[in-house]
Length: 271
Ligand code: KMH
Ligand code: ZN
Image (cartoon, rainbow, N blue to C red; front, side, top):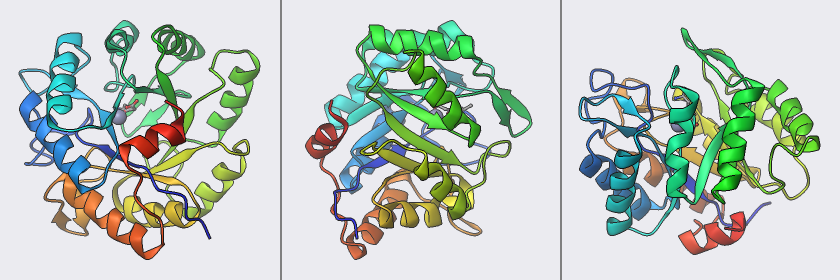
């Protein structure tokens, strides 16, 4: 039985969804910051952040990241994690650009993969470049693991000192092109972690709820949010990021997992 506090990450907007896919998608800096506040008030301690430009398109523009970060900070205390994945096809320099704002955390994806009909490109050079920018700016990386072989990449790049010794791990399961969100896959992946390594699970779509519950029962941490899943249940759109967070908070309580405060999350992550 695990009773360590659970850190909840909320992925509030993502880069791939449009208002046509999901009418309540937060787009403007105000909307994204308001949605982040709702998620934090519901129990999230980490906000996984993408931003959108004036046309609602995914963007890695530094000025927008700065504005949204300031707006979130005005509204609530939380750990802010920037996406370096961007959208499929985002150029490498653009992916790294917001790191100069020195967020608390940033993602580091561990390999190239099909991403639905597209390619999410993370060559070794991409990983080196982003890892370097992360280290230069003193940011805590979260390694994004979409498939089993990416754990071998982690081991290999650790030996080469490409990846810093201290990182958090996020298993992102259920992307078409990556590993599916079956619980047996989570178990396989978790077995590959070094003792004491902190980890989160982000289940996509219908995998979000069962993987969240299993991760909490296994002592892990959880990521929910509209980036990964727009449905509350089959055929019913989620009303908000907060609604998705509220549900995992209720499940955590039944599993005797307290919800990590932001301060506790900082201690767990060592940031
Ligand atoms: N939009 C995906 C292609 C990340 O945030 O670092 C990549 C992604 C991962 O969302
Ligand atoms: Zn993302």
